[in-house]
Image (cartoon, rainbow, N blue to C red; front, side, top):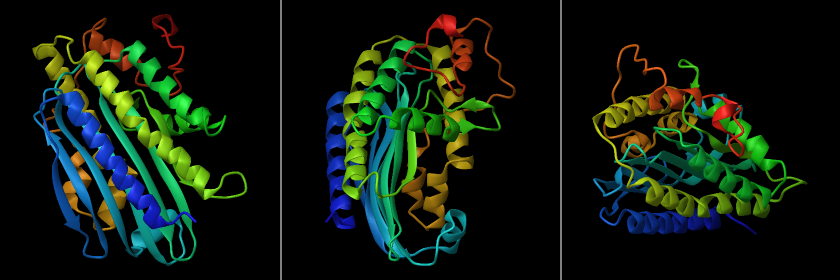
Length: 304
């Protein structure tokens, strides 16, 4: 029988593996570990990497927290009162080179003492400059993962990502999306072990996907205009995480460790009043693609 302890132990192994692979790809920076305990129950391992050859700042966090479910969570998720247990791995990488994309992944498991249980997670890419070849590669890898587990997963979870990673007050997506899923509950069509196998597959594909993109784009030259644009796009990223992200809200509502919750924020970001890129520029080109519903597997310039 698959237990919450089994799942948490695998997530810890995933954290170890991803940190090792990212260190090898960066070649310079090393993760610093910070273990912490939650007053209400549980704790975690926050691992931060900074000032690397490719990665400017990033985090690969593991947590397993438990205790009485806060009233805010019960109300928000419409749950009956019971104790909770939540475990998972959360990752965000902010690169030095604006030609290397930002990436985020989260895989998690939640259960309650009354028998309620589900898996959630997702992985999405936020390029500062949209590259159609990279976008197709990224989405093809995710489709391959999804197709191994259910024929409807990719289309369903891609749409979910488009809707979730949408900055409503800007009317633009955070990046080129990916997949997002939540409250996948064991039932007749999918057992707990089968759902966990899918979550594991998503987690195991993070390192090969991102290290490929790091290696491919790290040598592309850039200058001051590209760094300025990178900071503006990071500002959009910060807006989403602070205003709209449910994971941030869950961490705050469960009195999680604030340093670990906010590790997703970039080291530097900027906001320029009513910034409008030059028509025909690479920046303007990127903005054209920050919208829902794009078929990244077959997208072309002509499609826009």
